[in-house]
Length: 297
Image 1 (cartoon, rainbow, N blue to C red):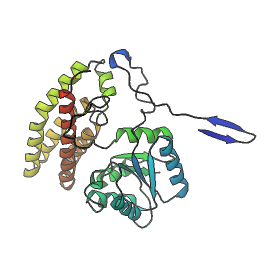
Image 2: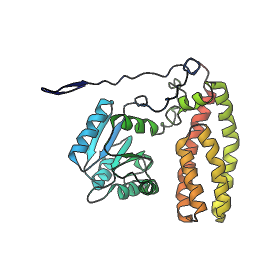
Image 3: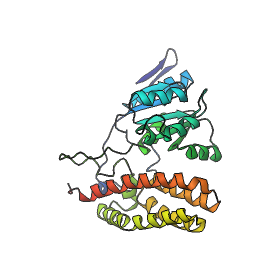
Image 4: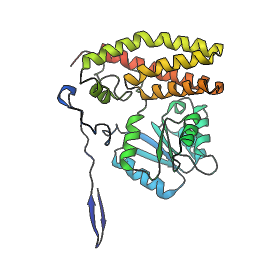
């Protein structure tokens, strides 16, 4: 696209969609992971934003990335929009009239827009950069956080980080998706770069994850039922390590938040965090099994 101003000059910009190379042929550089993420698959994205200028910028960004955006001017409109039409992701401004982004997210998570939207990735859009404010967004059920002024590449990155979970696999035979069954759930490129490009080692770690994690989750569940804060903190910390190792950042973040909540005695936060963790781990482990069962190409 071109941005041109008469008498000043023009800026010519483009987005190139590329597929990852084979890990053994890609040498990770010192700046890997700091640039823009590969463009995410085309999705239906709801932009909840009361400022028309910001909304227009967001729509332009998303259209350039190949997505299909729609706009709601406040949290109430966002709830109604999600009831009317399916959506893959929500970009939610935090400060809006009528119903703000935090309250709208809590209502979506509670199922007011229906059971499907309750699991959608919701990204907070705000001018606040304080850690405490980010924690408020996480507590409301938001998956990620972007600060204003919005950056085109940051929007691309945050969308790529929070791709919605793939639908349940159909019963008929299907082709293996590009990048394996875990693509879009964990950052396999980043993990492989840490493992020296060894897909074999990655699969061994996947197998250990499937073998060890369910038992730890069950012990964590029992500790939560018993209200044993020290034990909750221990098993949440125990889970955080393997989740981070395989690049399951959402699960690692949830376990980290549970660990902090148990350490600080915030018992009311632990149950909701654990339920989200269970759901995300179920999706993750299903994708890992699919990856391990897929024939090598």
